[in-house]
Every structure is written in structure tokens, then in C-alpha cells.
Image 1 (cartoon, rainbow, N blue to C red):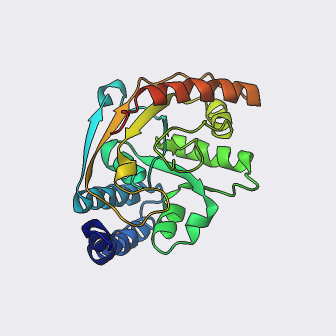
Image 2 (spheres, rainbow, N blue to C red):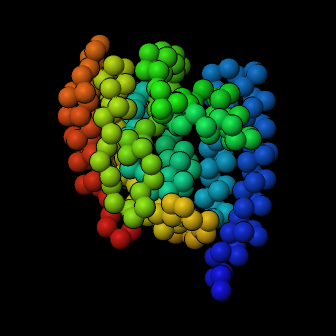
Length: 243
């Protein structure tokens, strides 16, 4: 028999979160016709994230925020345990944030429309155009917008951190922005990859010291791999086993 959390997910959380998505997604899209930088749209995304966490019953403990300067622009690099990682990060970090996501997400009603209108970077993973992505990234930096990267490429099935892919770090080196490693623990127990059921839970987000990435106009795969290994080691060090 299905347990309580399955029924709660299907008959309460999915309908309620759908309402949040439609209402705040509509407000977000409308706001971009006035605020083309997407700042108001991001405030809608933060409200959406907070409501999802509150409704699901997810408590978040954040440590290390004092290590970052709210007036700076960063590349935040995180491990990826669950689709709840994005609401946790958006609700917890007091920055204008955009994500790099797969292009297909742009076709989702309301959520995808928000991503397109608010300036998130949607990438064709089979044929990424690094030059176009970097140009869009530079425009975001001009508007003091930080970026979130999940370099594992997909969510973890068991909570363990997979090898960080070097591709995202090529862009980070070309942009020359400071990198902030993030360690997320516990979201896998809220909602697992490939699953429907969600549970209340406690999540920790550790913000590490920013890493000054030297700007390289034409970084090599070796440069990117070296940086990826360094950041991966830091992220792994902050994961709480069994959280």
C-alpha cells in the first residue's frame, strides 16, 4: 500500500505547488516586460522556492554566508541530490541568481517560460555553443547577476557526489569570476531522483570560501579539469554523511 507521504504528495503537494507555479510564473513573466533584467522575476522565483519548502516541510540550515559579499558577482558550484536543490539555493542565497539548465526545460509551461524570460542559460547539451553562452553570461555579469552550476550534470541517485565535469569550468575560467563551492546535504531524502513522493526533512547548505579563478582567454581541458577537481574536493568535504 502507498504510505502517507505518497498520498500527501499526490493529493496535496502537487496541486498546491502547481498553483504556486502558475500564479508566480505568470507574475514573473509579466514582470519581465517592465524589468528586462529579470530582477523582479527572480524575486518571484525566491517566493516560489520559499513556499515550496514551507509547504513540503523542509527546514534549511545555512552556514558560511558571512564568507560571501552581497555586492559581488559569483559562480556558485553545488552538488546535486534532488530537484529540491534549486528551491533551497534560491531561498537561501541573497543574490540575483540564474542557472545553466538543459534546453528542453524551456518548453515546460510557466516554469520554462520563466527561465526563458528571466535570462537563465538554457543549453543544448548535445551541441553547446560556448561562445553564445559566454556572451550571455557576460551580459548577466554586467547586471551583477550570479550563476549556479551543477557540474555533476545530473542528480545523484544515492546522495554521493559524482565526478565534476570539466565543461562548466571552461566557462568559469573564461569569465574569470570567483567561484563559491556549495555543499548540500539532505535533499535526497526529501525527494529522490526518479521518484514522485516527497517527505518533510532537514537540509543543510554550507557556503565555502570563494575561490579566485584566474581569467584565461582560451582555457584548455586540462585547466578546467584541474579546477573541477579542486572544487569537487571542497564540495565533498562539506557533505554530511547520512543527513
